[in-house]
Length: 58
Image 1 (tube, helix red, strand yellow):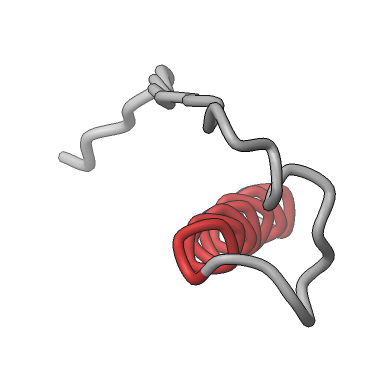
Image 2 (spheres, rainbow, N blue to C red):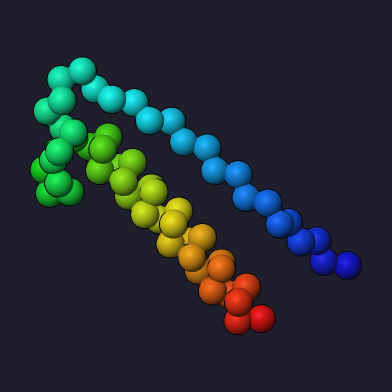
């Protein structure tokens, strides 16, 4: 019997640097931490959207 989980919990921690130099920088320039975090978020959202598409196709 398949098991279906109908609950998704997303936790995130947001911190603001005191310098403010990297707060408005785009993906081409800026700190590695910001771009790495943004990439992780994009990848996670893509996976979630793919899972939702697969679920709707069934």
